Length: 266
Image 1 (tube, rainbow, N blue to C red):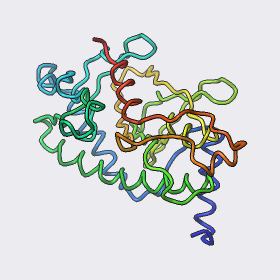
Image 2: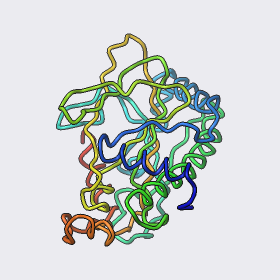
Image 3: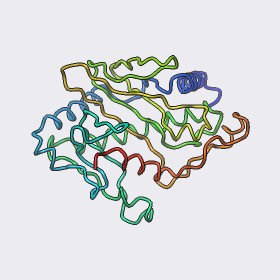
Image 4: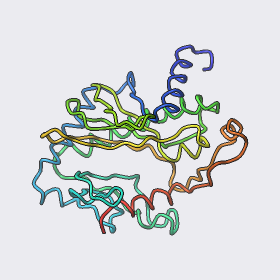
């Protein structure tokens, strides 16, 4: 693989993007633009349903924080977000991870309408999982490790093509738009990759400000580690950063549960 000039070019671009921005666009990924649009369209249709219909899959602590999230229910920095959402996670069987995963045990809640929502999203998720795995292999190579060094730790965003709302804070401290480019995903790296890379790659602050009068949909896919994975600086990244681990070991499930429990109005 190391002799493949195209691969090396992609790896260099990934490294530059992760070091300088923490955000990048993904194109030429093999997922049909028509499918990306269909996913956004079916999501629009769900949110256009009557409130009572959406509440049939209402998110609660009892169902592992899965399902429909009401407007203003999610909080960021102590303030309600003016968004509604549907949250899905990998199903967790009771007792699979002992007491660690109890708050998130359960299976996902799928709406009755639109009728193709379930099948469409499950197929889409499978495709994004494969794509994310390939991106992580490229990131591993960019950091000088084996292709299977990492699993998880990035987000792929499929956003409406005609509304600018996603903003990223650049190195100068300015908020700039991550403008929609048809057929592409916006990818950002997360906190756990910062730990794994020993700070070589840093996540970037971002926000959504929709000044358009129109309803905006963004379908975000989080490619995450195993729930019980221990995340700590890997040896080949420690060697590149002075030989000392800058971050303590983190169990991914503990990190996720802390975020989930702090993200919603009780």
